[in-house]
Length: 65
Image (cartoon, rainbow, N blue to C red):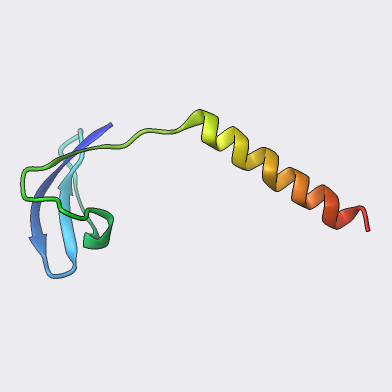
């Protein structure tokens, strides 16, 4: 998904979503961005799997006591 930074208002970036809706998101999410910057958002499937496996391992260790 790609979003566009429309403008900055205080500590927020006003971003335009693909369906043309606008959202205020914390400016800290977009270091070095400028008005008009296009931001790509993607789901990292492999990293998600690794984190889930790690969380399950930790939970198994906790509950095995």
